[in-house]
Image: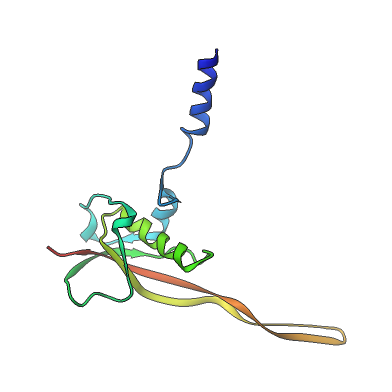
Amino acid sequence: MQEKLIAVFLLVFVGCASPSVCGFKEEQLAKWYVPTSNGADRHSVPCEHVAYLDEPPTNRTYSVLGWVAPPAKFRSWGEAINAARAAPSLHGADAVFIDQQQIASGGWEFSAGVGFASGGSLKGKVVQVRYKVIAWDK
């Protein structure tokens, strides 16, 4: 009887877990990634293998595998970069760098009511970032 309870516990709590990469669910990562035809035959790599570059490389040739655009909802820049590295790792990428960024929200907050007005507080900015996903040419 105890063996059956353990089996049921493992099936429910372990067997139902979604696969994850670097703490992100694979189904999320698939939504964030747009591949090109160049990356179709590459095998996945650990997300630590995918380098974050500050700018496009000028000292090596590379092929573009795709683009990744995680949602602009992370609490830190490091968390956003890790998300940007996780999805390309499933497609065998070597590196990512920022391809485009734009402010998704933010600005000045102002409110007014009967007999009073207030404002001037700067709200936090949310930046949507798209990364180019690359593999080094051999």
